[in-house]
Length: 133
Ligand code: HEM
Image 1 (cartoon, rainbow, N blue to C red):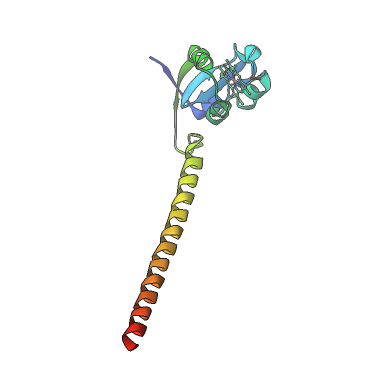
Image 2: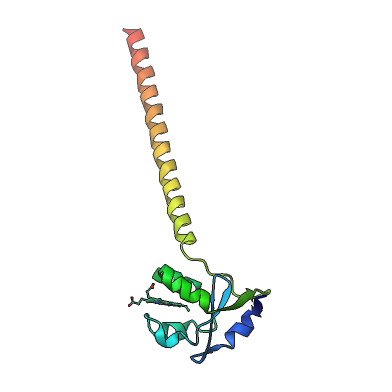
């Protein structure tokens, strides 16, 4: 059975010799790994006792790094009302890009429709002129 930690439990473990990190709502005891981290101890201490999901994923850690992480697992995070929201990177950027594309699509569509209407009007005008002649 894995242990459950609240956010305030985790935040009390932010010292170098007692360092918990939250990644994807799981709690990892990184104390033994701080000195070995190829990215340096500074970055781990920065996110000690906090949600490090974004920092960890932004670096694009290897499968090997994820295996080490599994070995440090001590439990899961039990979220409570008022806790900081889970951090998930990438999704926001994807959404904003695709909504930008949709806006562009509608703009183009409007121009094509307008062009069609103008062409139709010109055609009708030419026809009426021809009728007169
Ligand atoms: C306990 C959690 C972590 C573990 C087990 C871990 C493990 C590793 C490992 C094994 C590497 C070598 C490259 C690779 O295999 O991907 C690495 C590199 C790196 N890590 Fe982490 N890491 C952790 C957390 C973090 C966090 C929170 C940051 C915050 C920014 C970070 C920043 C970096 C950076 C910048 C490198 C690249 C170092 C370089 O190539 O010069 N790591 N990490």
